Picture (tube, rainbow, N blue to C red):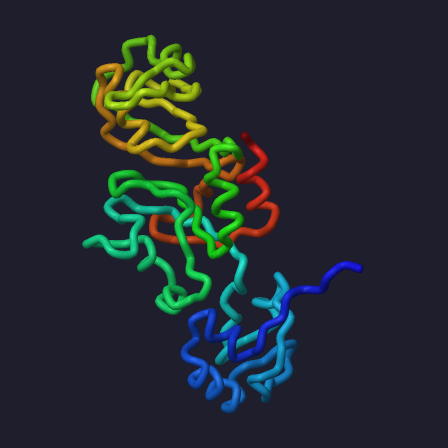
Length: 247
């Protein structure tokens, strides 16, 4: 017999989603501010089935419930923002609703984009999904739009695809990285591994310098043209599947 959806006490569910302490959440319930399927919930101890559609059925103070645990989002990371909780300066987590920073389990970035790289960043509170995407065994591809300081010399595509390029200070060659030339100073490069500053170091190895770097695709999921820098979008199951579909 198949298992039903997991359940949580209402006060625990809302506290885990960052709505406040258990006591603060109880006050929300006692004040009639929590509804499910248009019915006001009066018992903070009652257990709630945590289903994927819960955000469309439960409201807190007339606002749809935040995504329940086990969700993922795509963020259009702007330049100058760091994928960290602690570093100085603008942080990606501050681009999300303040309440989300109190969620349990916590939201984490799926890998990182450095401060000077923009584009598609995945974030999730699902540890199993995070590790599946970043695992070397998954071979999830990541495509970068690269702008260069100097024109391409012509042999970069062959070198990057060879699986023989060694980066300075390393003792293992890079995996093949397909490259598509867009102009003399611009190209797409697709990676299936994530070494430190890999794209920048690859072009440095062939005598060039990256002046702009933007990730526009992870697996089969592309950054939408209508998602502005600094904004995010919750992913549905089909979009999450796209991340893992294209290797």
